[in-house]
Length: 185
Image 1 (cartoon, rainbow, N blue to C red):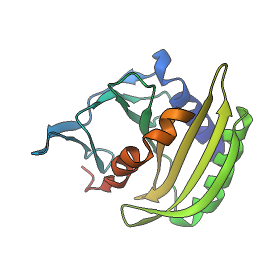
Image 2: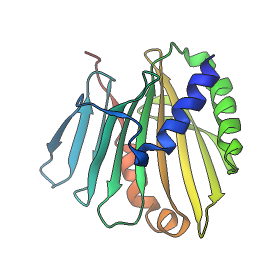
Image 3: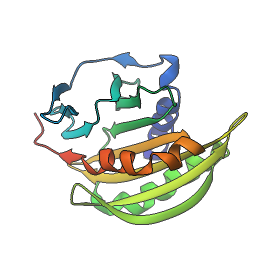
Image 4: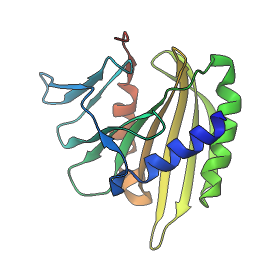
């Protein structure tokens, strides 16, 4: 059952652009002294900082009870960092099997897994899956970081055309590295 919910949630993230989600306002955005911004969501227990040349794109709950928030570059380069929080009950022991199932779901859309490796995010064990997919006219690359905290599965995802992905790896890694868990409401 969880894999079906995960797969549907993953598909929902992929169609964020089409407006198939319900907008919500769970988070708070504040500007930092250096001009960057921090998005904080105590309902889902995380915060993340992003540079001033990026913007909060969408904040929504989908039909499966999962939460999605995404940020995009204002440059128009089609780069997106998204965070999905899956509300089903997960235990840390399920991380490997969940990532395996999600990797299978990623390949169903024609993507090729380039690497899977252990990772740490916000001092929590995680798995990092890098994939690529041939689009109509360009290759789309993505980094998917999975972790489990407080019974929830968190997916932090960076998606971009290959050229932008490679050119902005350092900047996007800084955004991803700023992800922190906070107390839940």
